[in-house]
Length: 254
Image 1 (spheres, rainbow, N blue to C red):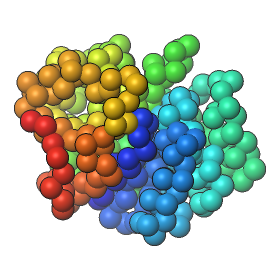
Image 2 (cartoon, one colour; image 1 turned 90 degrees about the vertical axis):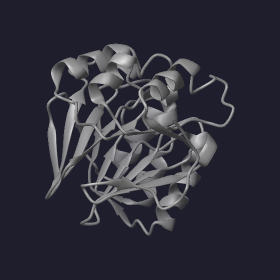
Image 3 (cartoon, helix red, strand yellow; image 1 turned 30 degrees about the vertical axis):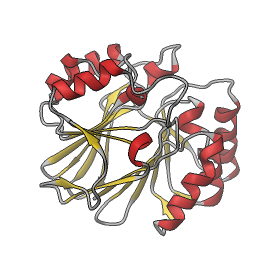
Image 4 (cartoon, helix red, strand yellow; image 1 turned 60 degrees about the horizontal axis):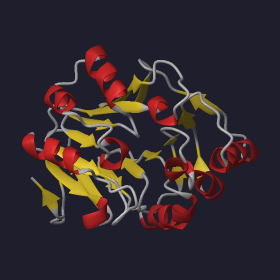
């Protein structure tokens, strides 16, 4: 399995490719970065996308997805059951409608059986709230003996709910929530999930100061090897279900 962390600046976009060549696209960056995602997918010779997961309707996560849906054959799309008045959300819904793609909603406890040995368990949201980040789709992807946790822009309340609701002691890989903001990634969350590797997607010298020092300290104090797109750009992680490795020496913090 390959986990591509696509450098879209201050945003999120992740391509997961399974051993049986299924493609899962988690978020699509901003409207300004749509060309980055499109060219990256083409470079990986992606012709179709089996699953698009829009973790929540913030423009830095879904801004580029309408363009992806227009340019690629998309089999299914999943979102939280939340609508907004933003242009990014409206463009995404219109793109799905134009290509007759039904939008599916994910809730806590839902399971997608991706293929043999790969299951996707939805950990959140359990209900829809007013704040976009609190509706982030958080999911765990299990591949044989390795677990990968993807968190969108989940905040502390969501993280607490997730660790109180599920047995997550076996997490190996963490996509750090909310670009490394101090609103997420508490020591309690890290001690419960015990990841070995973490990845932060954030823009170089972004206006929010992400990742925040407290988050980096929490990761460091937990002895988690942490990679950042603002330092390393695009990154690819590989797993055979027993180990997780890279083929390049990306800069990391420990």
